Length: 432
Image (cartoon, rainbow, N blue to C red; front, side, top):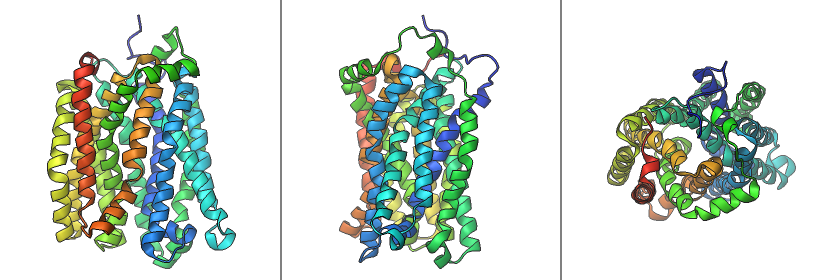
């Protein structure tokens, strides 16, 4: 008999636990967003090429390469967290993530150290990707295991909600820099300032993680699988992992489209000002922060399936038309309205999806299974969304072409929802 997952060790409040465990997510998304937003400056400093398109594509390829490390991190670090515990494992993922962040912040440019510069940036992204592979899974499972009965969806939604706070802070910093510095100063050195801020908050996040207490559910578990057993169990449940990957497709493609890629889209495709693009992204992050817990809480009341099906159908039907409207009438107001609509679909869907993914995985490999499914989706769908969007626009000449990509990801998620609920219906019903 497992104890109720609603208990943490005595002395730690729910709110404090949520804050401590999601702090690492803040750092991860803070750096990921900065890399996407300052892609044009990073391209000029580390990846100079004959054309802006080629330089930008190399930058987004390196950005995407970090996501290719996520599945490896999910298996290795996820298995480690399932073996040693949530607290110890999440301290390790934070250490690796911080190393990548510090490396990217301090690497000299191509003009100073030549090819070593882009190589070191790539190493930094690979370290970040490796750690992120298990960070999201570890945090989501921790939140699910500490949730009060009947509120798993609400609690786990704060994993993603914490990332939106990071985007608000990063966009706010970017907006302030844009007001204080001219474009040449930002291109030369100003873009590094937010990365330095990320380095400065690392010690604070370490302190929070060190004070994190293990969940009672994990402490009470008598059998803790070793790495070999985790790998065998994942292999036996490969169909659930693949379906989970497709379930995450909608989340990861839409998220990176409306946050990481949106500022570049606004500046280079729609030719809006940097300030306008930043303000839209900031508003989108606030919108995400609102809809994520709403989606999680609603899934606790009506079930996961109705939200997953409803939001994917809406995305399939409206993603391209919405972006097409924006492409034909680019303006600050239209960009804001269109991205807020995409944000609504993302937030409501992801609020239900995160908890559903923790519920379908076998309990003994819950972190590894969640992390692997999420990381595969991020590698296949999300991480390369900026590169794919850039390439689709370049090849088709259609500025709304990223809408096709979001609709495709939503179709994959819809099929996965039907497959998982047919196969594992009892495990996907919210516990009351």
